[in-house]
Amino acid sequence: MNCPDDVEDMRRIVDRLPQTDSERRIVRHLVIRDPNCGVSDEWVAPEMVSCRQLESVVLSGVTDTSDKTIVRLAQENSNIQGLDLTGCKYVTDVSIMELVAKTPPLQWLQLSGVVLTDASVSAIAKTFPRLVELELNDQPLMTAVSVRDIWSYSRKLRTLTLARSPQLTDSALPSPIKTLTPQPSGEKPLPARPHTWLDRLPPLILHHTAIDLRVLDLSHCLKLTDAGVEGIVTHAPLLRSLAFAGCPNLTDKALESISKLGLHLGNLTLAHCPRITDNGIVSLVRSCTELRSVDLAFCRHLSDMAVFELASLDHIHRLVLVRVPKLTDNAIYFLADHTPSLERLHLSYCDRITLKSLHHLVRTCKRLVHLTATGVPGARRTGVGRFSDPPPADLDPDQKSVFRAFTGPNVAALCKFLDKEKLRREQAEAQNIPFVARSDDSMDLY
Image (cartoon, rainbow, N blue to C red; front, side):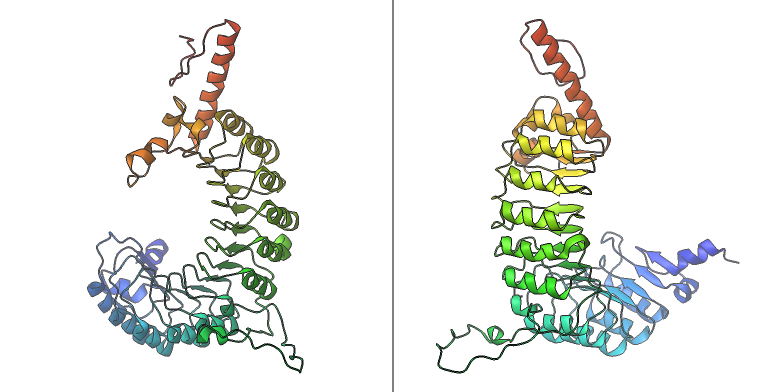
């Protein structure tokens, strides 16, 4: 007789296929995420017929998954609730349409990297009204036409990711206005001729609110503007996590719109948004006081003033300031003295920061467990590199030489080392001896 733990293990099979008929009858969740586990599509396809009680299937580790496998899954499994096909580039509209036609309403669907057309995306939105999570990243063919259907029909969504979809424009997003105002009569200049038929789409005016939506990712949607952000915030006022990384058209006006989320917003990513300034950060921080994670990497117009404002957040635990060139030691000292909650800080390629301010930071922020200072000149000092994590193998020799990432106990070890070097410097000055930096833990002055 099988014990409960054995039965539970058979209900969820990870990075392998069922091996016995008993497993095939019992398995409910098939999860294959490791691409090195040796499972290929030709072995998965027959299992879709044999395992008829599947409730969730993850095939992101089977990169050669084909339409045949998905069609069999749709035809033979009437209990399926969720499917992850992330990175399965051989899956096409053919099997997705079969999925829409044959399966019960899914609750979550992850199709990032599966190149789909508007027809499939619209069918998903209209057929699966119970969707709670929908991931459609990396969609070069998806346009505003199908994304408008997502906003219109998928009203229970909690997570929606549409990152790296180059065709998306503001017309794909809800309009901030709720009614169309009639145009006044009389002669007026003709409007500019639209460049494409997509430009003729009217504003997406919705009479419902996405009160369940909590996570939205529109990173690297290059045509997104401030008006699109305003429409999103108006339609989804309870968002907790927003990602607009790599949206170069966003300005401080977008941050004014985001500020309307107030206490609901906890995570915000604005990396590679070069038009954002200190004024926008001030507006954001003074309204969204519950922010816990903020990514402002490569926002080159920001200065110490932005960091002074961010330091006032009581719950901030992650801050990304990679390649913000105007930052100085003043910002780091202020962070250290005013953010006891800080756990993760990324300062790579901030050229004006010195080792002295980093020392004060690691000594003062007791919760700090991750610090990146790659490319920071002060972090190249003798002895500091030995506390860094090893650099990734794919970096070139120059990148490896400046890589500095301190995690876990190495943060405390770095602090102890810098304390020791500070004491050595004081002793050398007291004895009128030239100070020479050491890379070991010795207190010797020579």
